[in-house]
Every structure is written in structure tokens, then in C-alpha cells.
Image (tube, rainbow, N blue to C red; front, side, top):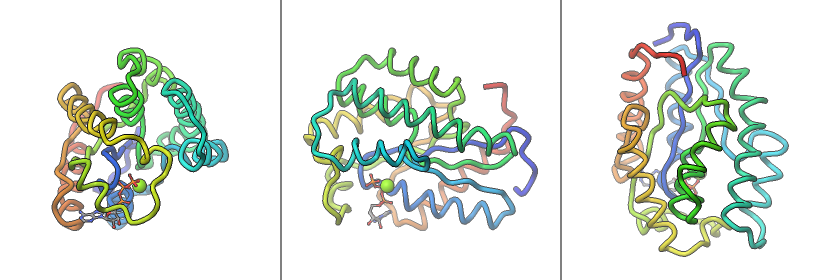
Length: 214
Ligand SMILES: Nc1ncnc2c1ncn2[C@@H]1O[C@H](COP(=O)(O)OP(=O)(O)OP(=O)(O)O)[C@@H](O)[C@H]1O
Ligand SMILES: [Mg+2]
């Protein structure tokens, strides 16, 4: 660790509601900084002016939106996040950690909302110029266990039917099977520190692997 990363290193956290993504993002950023890496942590949507505006619409309004409207808004926010924050940081050789990314749209609007998964995948990849994360950590737990952890009021996405959230979780598991090289599934049921250690081990393993162009 602590070596200079020529192309940067791009990590995303994914998983159902309450799976510990935000907590693990913080812990991983702290561990990597301690190891000498320069780290940029972002969340998707968010972290840009457009992202913050989209968060209000997508998460904190009572507005009815179709899965297609949601998907296109999430994509727009991601393009902006990519151009303003992620790509510039990667070009400087930094480690970028994002709280949600491409797979969230496939899981929620595709598997959950019924949009065509192949179309979403192709469009989502085009939106980010095919720069998917080098490593995706899927924090997996049951929908019930995830919701039991949420203490605050549910946001717009969280208020959707439990059946949708179950399809989201199963969709994530399917994505992990289809993208076994990129996505590492970890159980989110252990204690936070034990999971953080597993996350760090997965990151270190991936950092040591030679990477192709992508
Ligand atoms: N391993 C864990 N065991 C028990 N509780 C946890 C664990 N990790 C996080 N939590 C707690 O569960 C709640 C949700 O965690 P966190 O906000 O990190 O999840 P999230 O995946 O970011 O959720 P959201 O989908 O709402 O963004 C928080 O109160 C957090 O302190
Ligand atoms: Mg979170």
C-alpha cells in the first residue's frame, strides 16, 4: 500500500437499504488514508450541485416518478459526478470511493423497477465512458435486517414496496454472479469493524492485481 497508482483506483459500495454502505465508506477512506493513499470519497447521487438537487427530487420529494424518469435522472447525476469529481481524482492517481454507482441503477430501476437490464447496463456504461469501478463491494443482507437498522424516517426510495426491495437484493446477487471479477459480495450481518477488515482485505487483494485497460 502507499504506492503511487498510475490510473487511480476506483471503488464502489453497493447494497440494499441499511446495509452499512455509508459507514464502511468512511471506515475504508480512513484506513486507506492511514496507509498513505490520497482518497476522495463521494456519494452518488450527491457530491455535486446537480447531484444535491437530484437527491432532493429523487429521495426527499413526494413526487411520483416512473422507473425510467428515475433512471435518467440518476444517470445525469452520475455523468456530472464522473466529470467533476471522479475522473479528475483518478487522473491524479487517487483512490476514489463512491457510496453507490452504476449497479444501484441496475438493481433498483432494472431488477426492482422492471426496466430492461441490458438497456440500463449499456446506457449506464455509456454515461460513464465505460469507466466502471475497479472493485465493487456488495454489502449483502436481508431487506428486513436492513430496514430494522434505519432509525430515521424513510426517504422516497425506501418507502417503495418491500417486494421491490426484495427484487433489488436478489438483483444485486445476480449482478455479483455475472460480474465475479469486479463485484465482491460480503455479508453485512457481522459487526462493523469485522466487515471493515474484510473490506480492506478485498481492496488490498484487488490493488495487487495487474489491471488491464478499462
Ligand atoms: N455491521 C453493522 N451492524 C449493525 N449496525 C450497523 C452495521 N453497519 C452499520 N450499522 C448501522 O446501521 C445503520 C445504517 O448504516 P449505514 O447508514 O452505514 O447504511 P447504508 O447502507 O449507508 O444505508 P442507506 O441505504 O440508508 O444509505 C446505521 O445506524 C449504522 O450505524
Ligand atoms: Mg447510506
